[in-house]
Image (cartoon, rainbow, N blue to C red; front, side):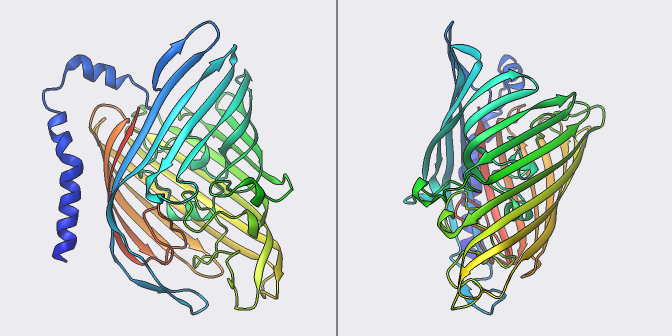
Length: 428
């Protein structure tokens, strides 16, 4: 226990000590420019007649303590596993963005280098990716390349403007799709009514190569969301902006994808979104259901519905998920023809000090055929400057039989107990 407390104190000192001094003697001119800087807007490197280049950067660091979770867990089939609990400090993630237009202001590009340093040595530790887009008008934007499947609200392009630093609630992480290559359309149909639809390769192309993809083009995801009073197209979480009038969102999404065992990322891929049972067992894992069978193909279908409200520094958001796994093909008899799981996530926050301090809580529940895991996370965001681009985020997670987990995520598959993390995020 002494070692654990010492580790926590060391992490607090390492992260916070430089910023205690940072806020002293604030320059009024600097504060004003910071206040008007939009996170992710970056800095213009070039702007000419034939195009533009803008550079932006995101960097995150995390102290993670998993020593207070059980060191073993037993799945719904009675198999016991040992958990490799972490207690470390990581320069977790760095993303370098290059964006702008070329030849025609309507022809836009986004290129980025994405590094998940917690996954050092794995195939997708560094990703170089992007997409090209042509903006016909506000109603129609056409793009091709890598993008997020709009399966849930946190996949609509609002990352990293979340309550939790680089972590979705457990239920959303369990049900969602991920990032893949494809063709997408998005825009604003009417005032406040937005859409995004994408035809892609599979649920997640991170961590796998082209030879692992099946030869079908059958992953499709569509989202529609309606907002009021400048809630925001990207539907970010929390009311840092302090809406003086009630702002709301109401949205829904549907996704379907034919998935095969060869198209799944590794169990420790940085954005691992394998189809899992509610006890954390990967559907395509060897001997997932018994020792003599293996699932080779399945149809994933998922629907989500979300709503939320922002008002004078307060926010409350709810999202409900339903997932069907059917058309199961296997080597040997797995004894299952179809799976259905449902669940929800609830997020609430309050800016207790305007533009400075935010407290939040999130709750997740999954009602699955192979388990009913829960998660409660509480934390705060300390915005060092009067902007969302630099924050310190301590968080405590109370988890019961987590069905999700990987190296870039704060929990482990099967985790039960308490997890502490202390995060630093910069988004310029």
